[in-house]
Amino acid sequence: MSAPPAVGERHQSATFRALRHANARIYFAGLAVSNIGTWLQLTAMSLLVYDLSGKSTDLGITVALQFLPMLLLGAWCGALSDRLDKRRMAIVTQALLAVQAVVLGLVVLAGWATVPIVWGLTLVVGVVGAFENPARRGLVTELVEPSDIANATSLNTAVMTGSRIFGPALAAVLVDTVGTAWCFLLNAASFGAVLFSLFALRKDQLYPAPRIARGGTPVRDALGFVHRNSVVFVTFVVMVIVSTFAFNYGVALPKLADERWGGESWFGLVMSVSGVGSFAGSLLTARRHSISMRWYLGFTVLLGGAGVGMAWAPNLWSALLWGVLLGVGGGGFISGGNGIIQQESPSDMRGRLLALTAVAFLGSTPIGGPITGIVGDVVGAPWALAYGSIITLATVAVAVAVLARRRGAVPATAAVPKPMPGG
Image (cartoon, rainbow, N blue to C red):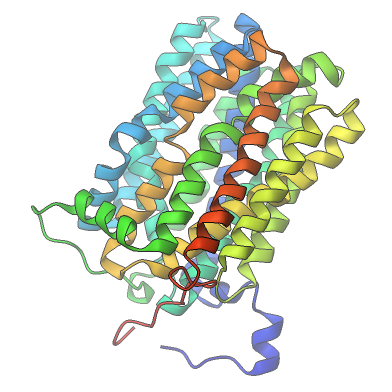
């Protein structure tokens, strides 16, 4: 293990301390480029479906199909990632996602795109993504020594959310100029960056977690750990509820932009400025050596309050302002929750807990996405965003009350894991 940095150096590099590892620098560079393409495709996909049908409900079904496999398969895919080489698993799944993007782009270019065809190709992304997510996120924990894992996961969130600054804005320009097909094909090309970084990783500088043996009850063991650890349990419950109802931006915002902010094409710009906020929220969390429940719940309050404000923003400029605050809250919420869970996680259970986190955050979308679409079509576009934000605020209030009753049983700050022997 490398020696700890001096006090001044530690203060200066606290936010980016995981980047002192060469593998982290290599991987995050490739991931950043690839995720700009991913957000480009996600934004173009929402606009394509909305153009084909004009219904928020169909957008809800689209995101449900994308994340339903995560809900059904995610926990078992996490157990698989704890058994296999995460780097190899990431290479295979990233390549398959690139193929899907090529097929989708060619379908749109040929004029064959219909809502059912888009749904079918979206389901393909969902199935591959259920395997890709725990492998990719689990690999992040193997790029750095154990004491830097919380920082690495926060920087990973910063890369994922920060790419939202560029991807949706690029989509807003390209959809109106060259069409959605080229957005999908550009996304396919962007996978070359992350694949290059995966092949370029220095194997002798990885910190692989112990692999679990075949057999046993790996998923049940992970669920049992969540239930027994009060810090992780509260974090998961909040994450499930908030993710189900408050993170359906691809469903709520296109209709909101169309009806209140001057046109659906502004959806990409709003997503971009929220990406700026998310990047900031993630970096603020990355500076911390441990994540407290107060920090996590505070960002969750900001997320809920900003969502209510954006729902009734009277014009584009006010929507952009609320979008930054929404992003800050969302970035802190995601990176804070991931950081707490990784701080508490045993080294041989990280893949499974990362998968359960993905199930909580992404797998809940098949439930919340269609509900959000129905709310937008039946009650009104502002309520498609506001109802989830109100639920978020109520969830925090209940969590605070529960934590107050269990004072002493739930520590204010989760402990940073001790380095593995020889790590």
